[in-house]
Amino acid sequence: MVADRHHTRLIKGARILLPVGALILLSTLFLLARTVNPDDAIPFADVDVSLRAKDQQLTSPRFSGVSRNGTEFALTAQVAKPDPKDARKMTAQEIQLTLVGREVSDARVAANTGLIDTATRTVTLTGEVEVETSTGFSLTTPHLQGSLSTLSVTAREGVTGTGPLGRLNAREMHLSEDSEGRQRLLFTGGVDLLYVPPVE
Image 1 (cartoon, rainbow, N blue to C red):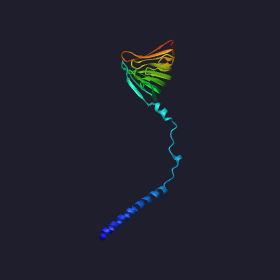
Image 2 (cartoon, rainbow, N blue to C red; image 1 turned 30 degrees about the vertical axis):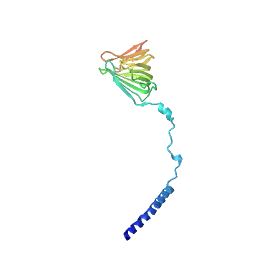
Image 3 (cartoon, rainbow, N blue to C red; image 1 turned 90 degrees about the horizontal axis):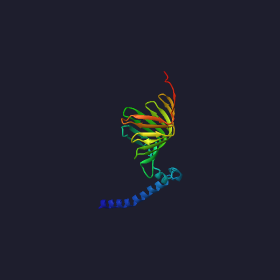
Image 4 (tube, rainbow, N blue to C red; image 1 turned 45 degrees about the horizontal axis):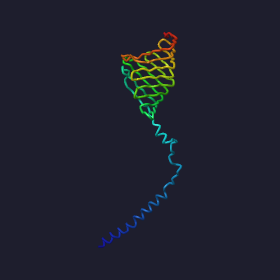
């Protein structure tokens, strides 16, 4: 009986002491907690979220494939923004286009900006377009447009640069492929060539 009374007293004491102790601990936490300074909150980025949601973009996109006659192409960009009405069409910046033919003939094209249509496999490149070929041409044009489905791209706003025989200027340039997948460059519209003999 004595043990039961002692046990009952402990339980009654715990019922009183434990809640009181909990209140003391909570009070201590509140007193010791550091006052929150609203100025220390992480600042929000200065961006309109609604505009950001609409302004979707692809970072470092890559598109690749093979033309009808076997030219492999790979197109990359620093950033591309899909057209809101048709996601298959997009504007891109810092574009790099590589073309590799069946017989190791290849070309590399770089442009500041451009339009890409992945559905029709067409491209429009603008802004200091540079073209380099494995056959020794290094050319510049302000505008290059055409198809990668059947390799056929044309520069109609003038071309300047160098080739295996020297410096050249032309009103138009056409880059295409033959049935064997070999790339061909055709210059038209008043071609001027300044022959520069090779340095021995």
